[in-house]
Length: 132
Image (cartoon, rainbow, N blue to C red; front, side, top):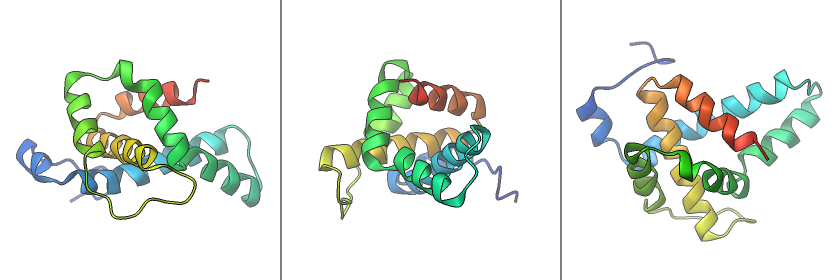
């Protein structure tokens, strides 16, 4: 098994919980954010860390989710909805419950697209999130 670029069957993917998708999606989203920041010329560990935290915080992810909502396909909206409705047990300081649910939904969507092997779609959505 290739753990870096693995894909699951449709049945296996459907059997994953939204929180499992969000777990993978969180890592995918953060890797994309870190890659973007390094490509932008951030060089010091401190500036990279601060900029990464700003991009991956629940509040920023919730804003990004709102930005890409009109772009989502029906399939993606369903994954997002499932992620938003996932039962979470704690909300980080600085984020509302609604923002945290939106961030979890975004991460679930990114996890889903990653597992499906839809790298181009991930790049399109991430680019749209970065547009201000």
